View 1 (cartoon, rainbow, N blue to C red):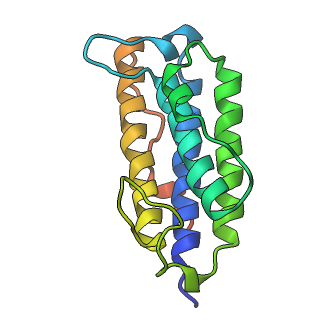
View 2 (tube, rainbow, N blue to C red; view 1 turned 180 degrees about the vertical axis):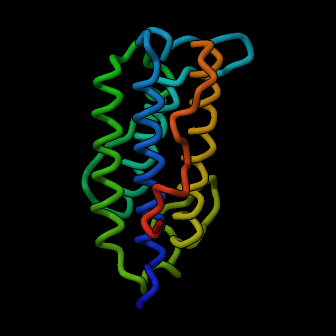
Length: 170
C-alpha cells in the first residue's frame, strides 16, 4: 500500500477540523452567543471562524491554489454579528479551497519556499502546511472553550476525534 502524501494527510486533518468548527458553531443554541466576548476572551467564536476561513482561503486557496481570493484580515477581526449561515458558508468555501489547492500540489513543491514570506520569514511549503493545520487546531480549541463558557454547556462536539481521520478503521 502506498503511504498517503503530506498533502492528502493535511487535507484530511483540515477537513476534519473544519467539520468540527461547523459543529461547534451549530452547537450554540442562541446565535447571538457566537458573538459574546466574556471577560478575558479577546475574540468571539464568530471572529475566530471568520479568521480561520480567511486564513485558509488566503494561504491555500489564493497563494498556493491561485483561486483569486482576496483576504481582508482586518475585517476578520472587526466584523460582528455575522449570521451563523454566513459563517458556515465561509467554512464551506475554505474547505473547497483546501481541497482544490492540496489536490493540485505536486510532491516536488513541498521542499520549495512558500511563495510569500510568513511572519517576515521564508519557510518551506511542507512546514507551512503543518503550521496551518496546527493553527486551525489551536483556534478550534479556543472556539470550543468559548462555546462551553458562554453557553454553560460542558458537552463536547466530538472535536479532533481520531475516529474522523482518513485512515481510521474499526
